[in-house]
Length: 115
Image (cartoon, rainbow, N blue to C red; front, top):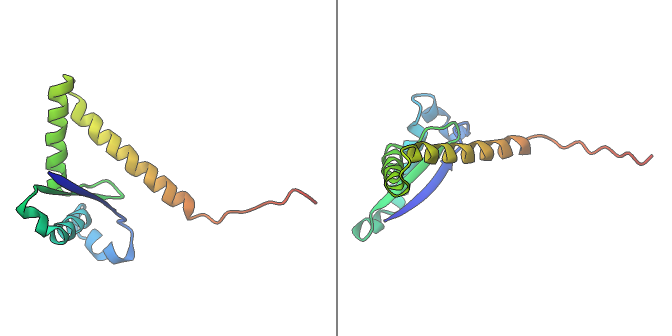
């Protein structure tokens, strides 16, 4: 099994028309592009595209995969909350990414205190 992860910026000009129709459509579009890009892998690998939107939605195949992964982690760890923990970790990672992008959009004001 192999997977490829992509995070799409829902507010990008190139996704605006797709994002305005339904939540999660941008992630599905990105996942479809990944499947087309790696279609040669399908003969030898089980390829799973994981596409996240900056505002949270995940593509359907990615969600299914993460739920299965969470159940397997639960079986090993014995904690029924492992799937929730997995989604929380991913959510926090995307929130941190958003914060960095948002912070980077500010113009830095350098104040010279040496008169």
